[in-house]
Length: 184
Image (cartoon, rainbow, N blue to C red; front, side, top):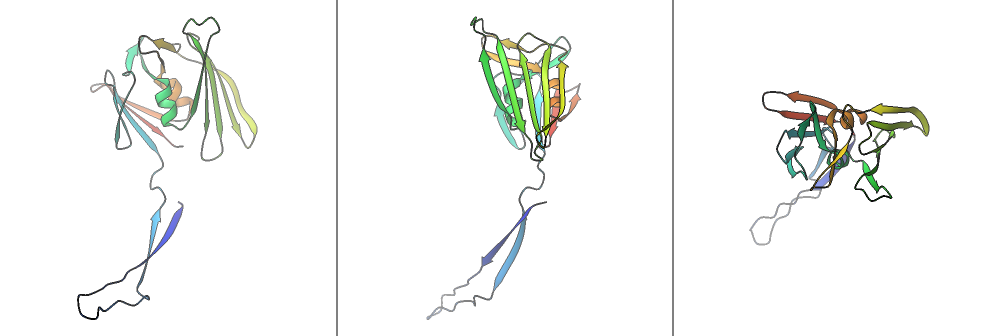
């Protein structure tokens, strides 16, 4: 765990005339962890447009929902919370569909690239480590990504996007709450 050492000088001044000052030799050294737990935690609830990211509430552009027995989530939101870059390229036909390129650089240097087209269940999935391709495969989504109108937001199956980035998911069926844990 990375730690920074901060040194603080304390000086006390009393109200006497002339004021008495403490000596500069009174030093305190404190070690503070840069980040105690780097894990990103996202809590979602089916039908709610509020998400809890760490300890902050975030308003989602579209609430998670169930479609064909799969939890669908806003693709850009999940990807960007993980620290990924998202590029949307609309089809030349301007039919509202398009290709999505997602790239993520993890702290250990691993690079993850995911490319897919809306309405197509196939996604190109590549992982690079130390400049070498360690994974180059096609992943299949149980349900293809699609655009929800009128919000114009692309949704993907939660399990697909989370697991592609190496996150874990737990689902509490009675409360319809989803917890995602991701280590950057």
